[in-house]
Amino acid sequence: MNLESIHNVYFIGIGGIGMSAVANYFKSNGKNVAGYDKVSTEITKSLQDIGINIHFEDSIDLIPSEFKQKGNTIVVYTPAISKNHTELNYFIEKNFNVLKRSEILGEITKNTFCLAVAGTHGKTTTSTILGHILKEAGVNATSFLGGISENYNSNLILGGNEISVVEADEFDRSFLKLSPTIACITSMDADHLDIYGSHFELTKSFKDFVAKVSDTIIVRNGLQIEGLTYGIDEEADFDAKNLKIIDGVYIFDVQTPTEYIKNIKINLPGKHNVLNTVAALAMANIFGVSLPVIAKALLTFRGIKRRFSYKIKTDNLVLIDDYAHHPTEINAVVNSVKEMYPSKMILGVFQPHLYSRTKDFIDGFATSLSQFDELILLDIYPARELPIEGVNSTWLLSKITTEKKQISSKKKLVENILKSEAKIIVMIGAGDIGELVDEIKNNLSVES
Image 1 (spheres, rainbow, N blue to C red):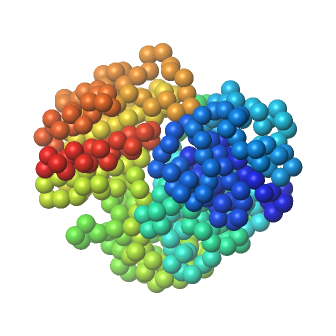
Image 2: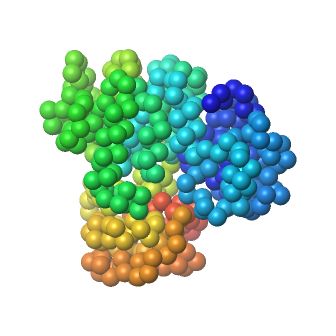
Image 3: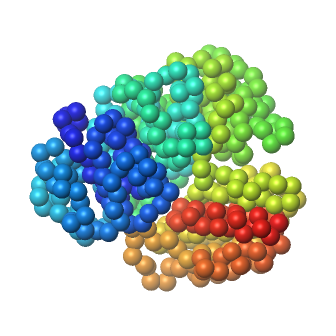
């Protein structure tokens, strides 16, 4: 496909975190961009601010007329969109060039030196750290991210068209559309079983991804995939050593296959973020960035929105917002919070994401959520799914062993949080819980 000859790019589901980065990319490269999404969000508003026409009703009449010209228009959609979507079916029936996001990302990056970060957990943080390192090192790379970087207030770090950083998403086998030069795998825990059916098939898909890597593969130590390894005190090829916390900052050394660097510092909580940092360091170093330059870049990395984001941080009250939506991710958040605040009561507020994921990992969710001193559950966020009989937050709550636990509506969430005596509040989930955080923050600030 010759992207240069395309003038119009229309996005169905333009407000998705991955979709919006690609829309921003095309707009920044002079294309005419428009799209649809179900609801207005901060992401869609940011796209409208740069001149992208977005509407929020599934209606063929609302598609701008120039995007109905088949010859110079491509249509990009997210798999989260219903197969019954009117606009999507209009473009398909009219024989437009209709591509999934993964396919268009593959087209954009196929002729680049592509650094791809895969994994069921950790890929957003790792790819964002990597994009920041390359930017600070003066490398003219374009980075497509799965989260909003605090440094750039964007999920796109715009650069040239010769080097790319991508978050290689395993959902719907999307990462198999990529052509990575250097790649990393952070984890391969069971997830997306509604797509894969079994952990075996998920693992097989990761191995298929590895087969597409043209140069170097880097893997979390112990993943049973051949490549350079990384870890913490594990005799890995890229190994973090002498890990310590001073004033809330992680400090550690790194042994690489050829060098040793002391006193790497990061301002991210949790050992999982040490691992993410070492993975990004390994990729950047193999690409050619020196360890001292990497260490300097890490000092200015400010994190990612909704990845252990402090919304309130005082001596008397802490409010943390995180995207965690899988038991492994919740465990990482809980461990980080307890490491930072070992003697304080912690209230968790969780919105389950997807009926299928809740069903597949119900016991894992119950175990991870039972680590909170107090818990509030919201109803399951359905995203792309229809309800599954018997799968609901009441079922999940019944399996959680925390004594202080309840289900809350969104309408009463502020009231229920204010009733708690906990001074450490953690809001987690991948649905629309993130849109409630500012309201919670404002009410807590008034109360305190």
